[in-house]
Image (cartoon, rainbow, N blue to C red; front, side):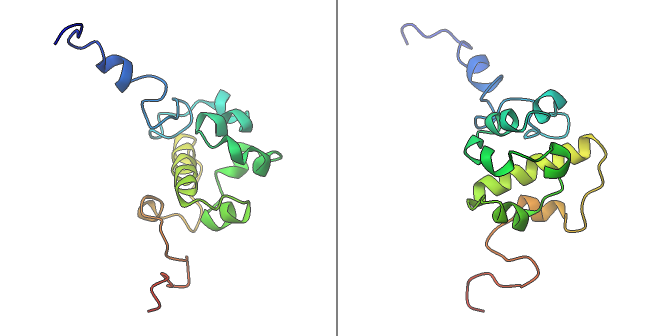
Length: 130
């Protein structure tokens, strides 16, 4: 292979900004150690780092301390209709709560955040008609 140096691409593509699906470090996406309060304090920036900046107007008056207590239904009520966006936010919220030792809310079940899907909480309806 002409012009290819071994190892030249791995560090550029597997670490640093964007290595985790676009979100840069400090947003809480990569676990509870991936939390930077400087990013959390600016909600617009936090959402931009999470690549969810289209929802900035939905949370313009919210503090991160209040946002991390939201559940899927609350996010949907705020206009976050896309399931993928809600899942990303819920994962980040859970990691931030863990980082700051904020007790998880009553609804929180780690598997539920990881597997959130078409099941409507508390109704047992999954859209299958059963």
